Amino acid sequence: MNICVFGASSDIIDEKYINASYELGRAMAKRGIGLVFGGGNCGVMGASARGEFDNGGYILGVAPTFMKIHNLLYDNCTKFKYTETMAQRKTYMEDHSDAFIIAPGGVGTFEEFFEVYALKQLGRHNKAIVIFNVDGYYDKLVDMINHSVEENFVKNDSLELFAVFDEIEPMLDYLEHYEGVDTDMMKTRYAFLQDGEKIE
Image (tube, rainbow, N blue to C red):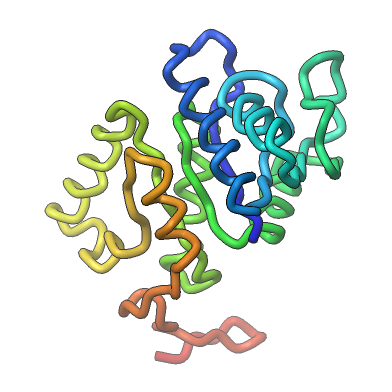
């Protein structure tokens, strides 16, 4: 099993996020779970990769060619895939992962979460998505999603498409035993012909 970890590349974040990410990589390696990540050497990305590497795990790094800058990318990946664009990078990571962990991060991580979340809602994949809520980092984001449901911008069923954890072992248990969901939004609401005609 390979799990994609989305997370910060910043090296100025609080040490608690670095430590938690290292422990995540360590725990994944101990279970024989490979890491797919954005290839960064710093922040949450680098910490999770070091945890995986130090414990003998598999690491697939993915980054666009313009990021080939000294000390920016992690050197000890089992395999490294270079892409031409950021969009290709994200697609490659999604395609080569069995599940997704949203670790603490910034705008890029938010965008990655909402993409895999939206794609799951549209029925384009049925892989597990979890938020690793270190020290309540994502509390307000989850509150916003719940608020969107309350205001009828998002269907209540969408809350079944991801789970939130603040501890690593229960989170990995969930991912390893995940069997998918069957909600209304995972069923195709519309079919589209090649000419674009919509069928109700």
